[in-house]
Figure 1 (cartoon, rainbow, N blue to C red):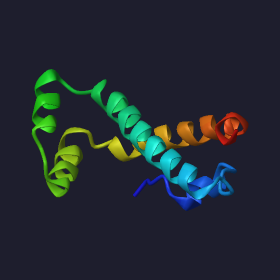
Figure 2: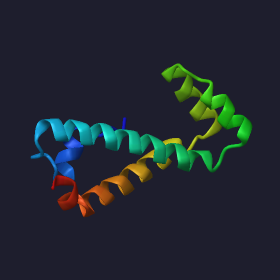
Figure 3: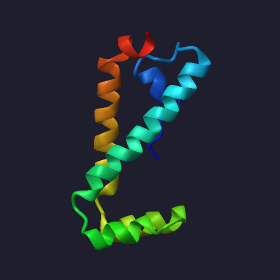
Figure 4: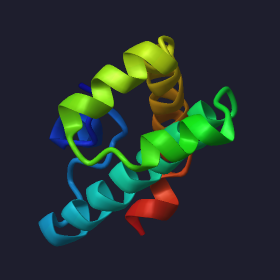
Length: 97
């Protein structure tokens, strides 16, 4: 599973941030990752599929739905995660300031 966690923070060079700031940044980055993955996935789905997916509340059901309707979702999520990681590394000085 792709996560923004302490390992991510170490990889991008932000492990030494004060704990409260680090936690806040990890939450922000996790939300940003979800938004970006959702945007990328939505490009290949119909309005009806988006509506159907939006109605799912169970994580297991969501995973099953993605397997059936967006079988490449793992590759998309990995690509977006790498892009986010690169962006954070390129801007780490500003983020840490």
